[in-house]
Length: 275
Length: 304
Image (tube, rainbow over all chains, first blue to last red; front, side):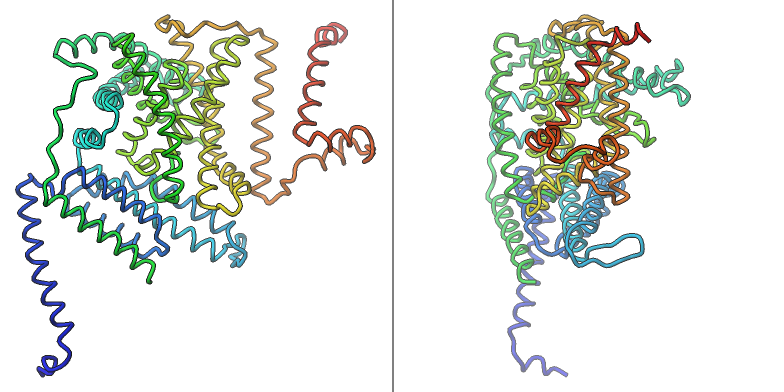
């Protein structure tokens, strides 16, 4: 019954060491998350790793790992209670990926299989499915990151990456105005609907005219408000070419985590090539 | 439709990023210069950027398909704030659109190139070309139409380059044809949308750089309407033919068989056509035929 003790100990040693070290790392991650108000990783490291991971996904030659990443993202979104939002955002990339799968299957490669009215190329389907897997995996990663990090956090991260100040100023102003304008546009649309505009019975030309008049009014209002907004900002001490107070430096643990995860990504590429 | 993450090969990701960064750098230089002269330009630019973002995520009705889609918005923006600033605005808008899963982070370079550089400058070029010879609404509308089509042709080219590098021209054509069912109605919608918006803005007289243009007479309006209708019929017909597996080698064989059955292969017309190439030859015939018909139009109307 206990003859496994008398045989090669290597596997037993490996599983014991990895299991117990993982327990320590897992506990540490849990504690770190609790310390950082639920955030596991610095957004600067997160963005860099995301970029790195997406590029490595596009280098993969098999669909297994991208699909595994997709499943993992779905599980994380379920765990974070953001699955509905996650699924809704994933619809567009999936449609695009289906379009590519269809084009590749119908046109790429010579060895075709006839299914009545359509002939599908097996090579094209394989290639299309690989691209499909890459797209959904990469998109799900991006959606997950952007759902778990605030716009301000990402903009601050961009500052750390030395993105020009003007671009960041425009971005931060735009992020505020987008919400204001979305609400304003919705209100104007509702007001127009209440005055029999944009009705189902009106023709295409009338609908276009109604939409364009809302947009035109939004733009003209924006131009008028720009100066007022600028004056208000200046009166609160805002300066375009102000010097940034500087970001908090990356601590050793964040760097270590970044290094470990980067190594993990390289290992994933290696596994993909070996399969 | 923006390109999502995971489609482009890494070399193309970096290539499109490199090109876009050059244009963004140029745009930033111009913006910074303008901000120094006129500090209020920054919030104004951001406000226009926000409006463009809202427009591009706002669905508009598309005829024929019965569905809805969104305009590119960059040709309109280039008319209002200039094409160089629009490059920066569109890059930022694309960054924010990644938050709603339109496009992606690694494809911002490629999408900026198609929407913010090719579509924007292409549309603006058309606007400048037509501004002094046509009414404002028409030149703005044509900018929207051209910008929209150029954007999607560029996207198709980017997809073909990355996905099918062995046969780029064929797949470029194929991806472009794939975009037609949604893109053609959308391009016409963008024509109407941009034309109406710019007309509205010019009527409120809050944009000093938008001139009122030249009025169009009834004859020119009818001719343009006819041109759009026939072009749309030809494109839709070609697409239906393509779906039905028709020979897409051109229309020269049809013309030889039906319009000019007695044409001699060694004749001057055939030789000129082979010398200049088919598109050039047809363009020449169109120009000469149009000029003669237009020149004698009043005479023909009077006699009839």
